Length: 202
Image 1 (cartoon, rainbow, N blue to C red):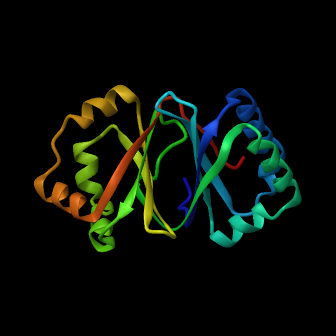
Image 2: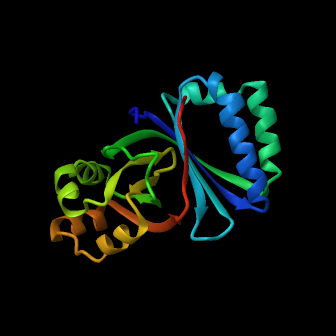
């Protein structure tokens, strides 16, 4: 995976999942080849519900906005919105860090964590604990940690499979890591993508 410098997170209640998948496939086939700066995306329905999540990676905010302003993108997005009940929620994240290998399109299970940042410095230290994380949780392929304009965050973690992820959850965190986590972030919610799918440039 290329290193992203901008992430756009999208969430909403989908009433037409089959139509949405077809539209996503159409975007990949028809629009992605001319989407400047697009690096790929991770998608899924959270917790076996109708809540759709998308984590889309771009080289920069400017290139993401340039893509959004294209007429063909606008037409596609208007069609996509019809698949949802109510407005879509967006989080634009300029501050992005990779965890381990940054994830993989072959991941069998993805967990998206959302919350609010309390201490940015402690958070940066936590994200940099790659060696410790790799040793403790070998089922984690990697992920991204992205902080949005309003101080909230989106942490996307790719796992080899869900069974291994659940076993790993049973391990206790080292005390110093747990203390840093409690001081760095709050209001955490978990969105489990049991059947994630991925897009990448051809």
